[in-house]
Image 1 (cartoon, one colour):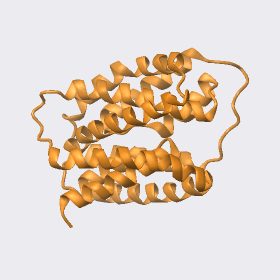
Image 2 (tube, helix red, strand yellow; image 1 turned 180 degrees about the horizontal axis):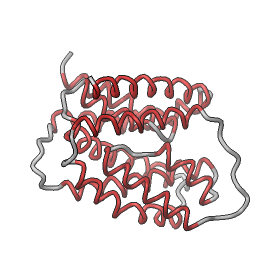
Image 3 (tube, rainbow, N blue to C red; image 1 turned 90 degrees about the vertical axis):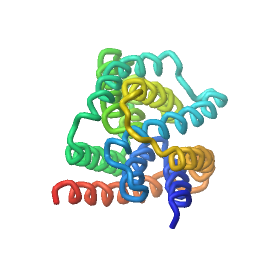
Image 4 (cartoon, rainbow, N blue to C red; image 1 turned 120 degrees about the vertical axis):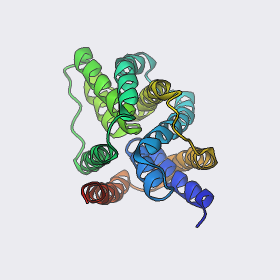
Length: 247
C-alpha cells in the first residue's frame, strides 16, 4: 500500500476519533507515522505537532461558530502551557528514541484508562485557577514532548477545574491544544529534521475532514461505546510500542 493511501487512511481515523470523542484521537498520530509511514520517533513527534495544530485549529473554528469555546478560561489554561510546551519541544530532539517511545506508550495507556473510567461528577466548589494553571502547564509539556494534543487530559481538567459543561470543555480544549502545538513547533523550527510533506499534507487534510465527520458520528453512536472501543485500541498500541522500545 502506498504511503499516500496510508496517510489518508490514518489521518481519517485520527480525525474521526478526535471529532467524535473530543480527546485521545491525536494519540494515534505518532504511532501511525512511526509504524505505518516510516518516521523516526523524533520526526514523528514534530510531524504530529503540525498535524495536531492544523486539525485542532480547524475543529476549533467549527466549535467557535457554535459558541462552544470558553475563550477567557481557555486562554488562561493555554497560556500556562506555552512555556512548558516550548521547552519540552526543544528538549524532545535530544532524547533517545527508545525513551520517547516508552514515554509515548505510557501516555497512550493513560489516555485509554481515562476513557475507560466513568466520568466524575463536576465539583460545585467553583473555579480553581491555581490548579488550572498547573494542569495547563503539564498539558503543555506533554504536547511539546510527544507531539500529541492531550485532549484526554484537557477535557476533564476544564470540566473539573474551570467548571465548564462537557460540550464547552471539548471546544475549549481545542483552543488549548492549538496554542500548545504552535508553541512547541516554534521551539523545533530550524532544527534540521526532515519533514516529508508528501505524507504530512494528505494526513492533515484527511484528519480535518475526518474530524468533521466525527462530530456527526458522535450524534449517531453512543459515546460510551465509542470510548470503550477506542480505549482498547489505545491499550493495544501502548503495549506494542512498549514491547518495541524494550526489545
